Image 1 (cartoon, rainbow, N blue to C red):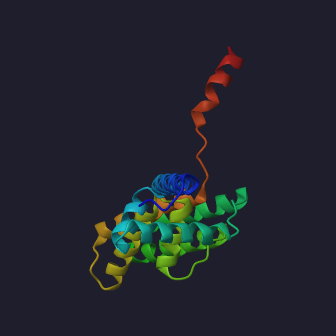
Image 2: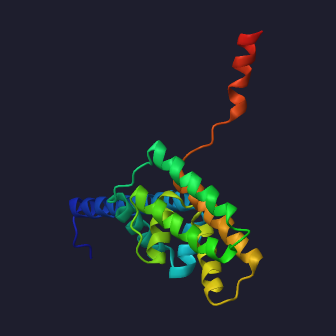
Image 3: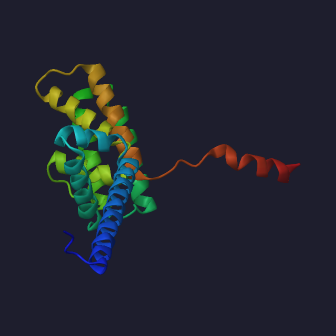
Length: 197
C-alpha cells in the first residue's frame, strides 16, 4: 500500500534530481581541477602521483604547493642583478675544466643564491624542489638530477662526465629562474640595413 502522496513523491524526485546534478557538477569540477594541475605541473604531476600513490593525495600536495608559493614574495631580478648572476655563471663554467667537482658545489650554491634573490626559501632540498615546481615545472627534474649527481659526487661515485651533466642540469634551472631571454642580435640588423640603403 502506498503511504506517500503525490507532493511527497515530487519532492523526493526533485531531491534525487538535485543530488544527481550536484554529483555531476562535483565530478566535472574535480576533472577540471585535475586537468588544470596536470597542465600546470606537467611531468611533476605524474611524479607526484607515483610518489604519493594516488591522484587525490598528489593533487592535494600540488594544491598545497601552489598555496605555499602563492604566499611568497617572488620577484623578478633587477637588470643589474640578472647581469651579475649571468656573469657569475659564465665564470663558474670557465672554472669547470680546472675543478669539475668544485664547480658542481658552486653551481648548487649559485642556484640557491638566485632562488633567494627571487624570494624562494632555501630550506631542505625537497622543499626547494617542490617550491620550484610551481612556477618552473619544466626544469624541476633537472634540479633533481643535478642534486642526485652532486650527492653521488660527495660519496665519490661520480665521474667527470656525470659532473658535466650536473652542471648542464643546474644551468637549465638557472636559466629558467633567471627569466631573462637573450636578445637576438640579428633582429636589429634588417632595420639598420634599410636605413643605410
